[in-house]
Image (cartoon, rainbow, N blue to C red; front, side, top):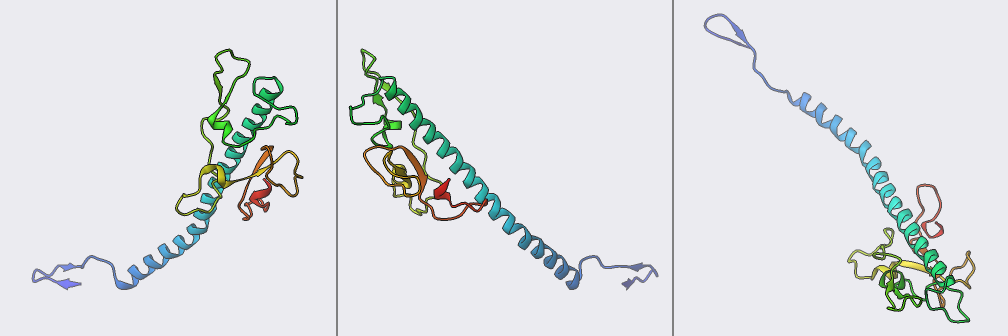
Length: 167
């Protein structure tokens, strides 16, 4: 407080060092509490992307199989009707029932596995997925002459405790 010559008392305005330290401590405490929640939110978002990508690709694989069973996609006698390569879903295959041989597309583009750890994005989208052939068992998926199913190649566990490669 300062006393003026007129006899009035004025107060100086501002924060003390203690008040500033308390505010900084409170903000730091709140920030440390929010960071794990942000990490969980980011992980949940990537898991949602993975679910969507798996659903899109698996639906496209089933649509390809149905088209092969209907005779619209070329299938050899010893094949079961699943796509030979995952890329065929987006590149398209000729419709053998169409006189003009127009292409049938099952995906607009092949989504990338959001759980695939590649910093430079050098790996093509198709190689981010694990592929299971029709002949391989579900507990030990292996690539083969066709693509029956796909899975994430990540060995991390999801928020539900199940590894991503078992989704």
